[in-house]
Length: 218
Image (cartoon, rainbow, N blue to C red; front, top):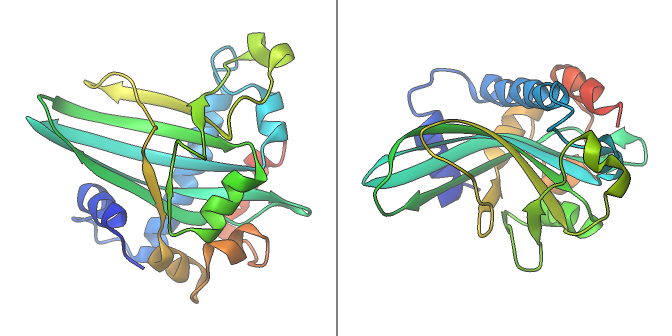
């Protein structure tokens, strides 16, 4: 099911691409792998290992925000859940939106959203669109090794970001993230639901091995 979220994301990130849907999804998986590795390279400011080890799932996205006077943002990525047999296969997700006010420039933000509760995972598994905030609280996660010994669950989701460009800061309250069913169907060769993927009923393809290997240490 196509949503306005995915349409905006596609317009910003994929409109001019000649890459096949399956290859585009593989690119998102590879990018998610690189993002986790980049966060691991800055342990003093990155995600505390205890947060990742306690995570019930993780969403990883690259979001592009651009504008002059008005603004638009769009991003693609994947979400995975921890199952009894380890991490699930990746499910495609996307986000997008419009803004108002004077803004100029381009910003690319790498986002990692740690899903701390079963309810947070269920939202991605059972809903076409997930809105962060409200019943699914999202907060900036604790950072680095200094927080390792004092980490306590304070939110259904923790957000972490790395940004470049002319915009400053990132707020995820009210952000909607949608399942990209077409991308999942292309990647797995048949129609599959996010619930089937995140509960481990869909076998991870070979292209996801690097991502699963990076996550397997948590």
